[in-house]
Structure formats: C-alpha cells, structure tokens
Length: 352
Image (cartoon, rainbow, N blue to C red; front, side, top):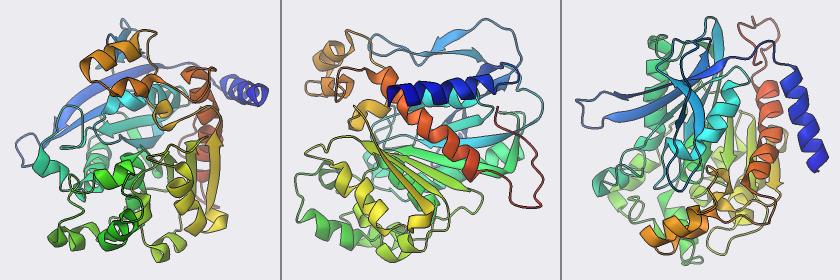
C-alpha cells in the first residue's frame, strides 16, 4: 500500500508542467453584516516574494506560502474547504497547499460560531448557515477574480472534515431531518455529535424547518468528506437521489464516540453506488485529517485543554504525514475524474 501511495504521488509530480508557489490571502466578507465571514485563500502564483510559514504555532507545523501574492494568470479549478466543529482554516492548510501544487485555487471560511476563533453560542445554533457560508464565499470568488485568480466555474468541488463533511453533503443536495437525527441519538447518546446537538441548535423544534431546507449549490460538481459527522440525520431519499460524485474518506478504525462505520458508513449505504467511492484510510483516526502536530504538540495542547491532546495521536506509528499522503492519493485522481469536462465542454484549465 505504501508503495502504491508513493508511486501515485510521484506520477502527479511528474505531471507538473512548472512549479508555481502558493499565494495566500485572508480577508473578511461582509464585515459590517450580521454574519461577517473570515475567509482564507490559497492559489497558484508566480510571485517570488519571501515565503512564510502560515498556520504554525507551538503545537502544529505550518505550510510555506507567499502572503498577498498576485494570482497566477489563467483559469483554475476551485476547491472549497469546510472545517470541523471548533476548527479553522488551519486544520486543512496542508490539504490546501497540496491542491495548489496541482493547479487548484482553494478557499475556506471560518464558520462563525463553530470555529476556534468564534464560538458565539447563537451563531453555533444556526447550523443551517454553514452551507450558506460556502455559497457566499463562492459568490465572492466568481465575482472578484483578483482575490484568488480566475475560477473555472465548471470545475468546482467542496471538501469537509467532520462537521465540514455534513456541510459539503448539504451543498451536494442531501437534506437533513432533525427529528430523525435526534431519534438516532436516543440509541447513541454517547456519540460526540449527539452531545453537540443542543449547541448546534438541532434540539430546538423551531429550527427543524431551517435545517431541512435545500442547500444544494448547483455550481459544485463533486464533494469529498473526511471522516464526516452528523450524517445520520440526512434523509435516505435525498441521499439516494444524489447526482454528484462523492468520495468518502474515513478513519481506519471506529472511534467509540464517532464510529466511521455509522457516519461515513451511513452515507455509503444510501448514496447511489455508481456515484460514491469509499475508503478507510490506514492509520487514520478522526483527527488525522487535521494538520501535523509537532513532537511536543500533544503535551502543549493537553496542558492548555486537558483531554484534547488526543488530537495529535493517530491510529498507528506511521505518522500523520504518511496518512495525509494516503488521503491525497485518493483525493487527487478523484478530483481529476470528477471535474473532467463533459463531452463537448471546453476544458478551460487543467490541474497540474
């Protein structure tokens, strides 16, 4: 398996026609609105400015980028990222940089209320705003090409980790039933997503119609979930009608409080077999899809927040970098195939 992963990545590297650096930009959309949206952008650039490590702190490694660089000329496919509950853009920084190396522009919001920087309880209880955040971000990128370069509107994908997986599935057309989710939680009270139900507003009856709305964004052509959560509330009917290609990447072993077999497994069981690919990533647990921890990272996090040091622990000794490579070995060919132009459709950009 390891040889397969490295061979696959080597083939992609050989396909690069010329290396572009990673441009990086952060700003806030609708800063004066009731829901200002911090966004982070990564994109190919030919700028030669000094690289900086972004997303790095005492516990986590960062990635090398050039801040506020001019986007590379041409049109690029786009990947939209959605972080998990209590996370941020930093969690998938590694994935964004790897995607830019393949010619994609990448963008991520920090979802108000469920991000590490904004834990406002009222915003967190409005879970239905999460997919709307992604659509707002997409609107801005298509209308303002100076932000991250020109976007190929025919080649757009969305990826999400944990609660971000719920977000991108909603964007793909899956519809949520709060009563169904809560009924399931009566059987699985110890599950971490069930413990979040009140904080996410799922237990409030007045929110049920808002959560059940159709958040499908027709501009998104493919979705990838990374050990998704809160999926058991999606209706089987809307999952069975899914028209988009879906890649489900899940932890190798079931966690007691968020078993992949009942989260990603629920999606896999009800999505059309012809539209879904499912892989359990060797050595991965739920947190392995986040950024790489430094050797002392777990201890630092544990001192600051007892019990949370586990986010630096993976399922085996191979290390998070190898797990990330295994995930990329599935993600990159999936995107290439899923975002390929339809017959007769002009191919305006190619992922390097």
